[in-house]
Length: 158
Image (tube, rainbow, N blue to C red):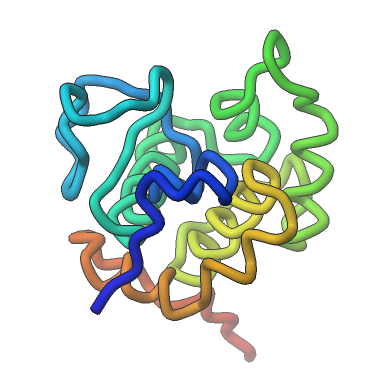
């Protein structure tokens, strides 16, 4: 059985939407998306299970990296523009939590993708979200991602 926090008023918005990355409503046909006609949130997508919301964030991150937003600075400027966020603080938090410097090119691996999604979810939902979203939830989302990524960066030694 997979987790769902759908419409739980006692939780942060991202969790009660099963959308911890707070993806804004679009016409994107995300896997597991609650149709807009059934989604009471006026701004953000809802998903039937948490793993689908995490998967959507994974795919959103991958799409942006593949479009050239391949540093934490450029990626977070896309997700959290300065006109509605403290983007500098958001970037600083993601850098601290992932250990990836703000202007380094992001190497796309499962490990990096999960780390980025966790950091974004932390900023979007607060530190208490970690009580509700576990490593298993991220792995459940990775299992349905539909994109084959290396597990982690391999360092070759001579």
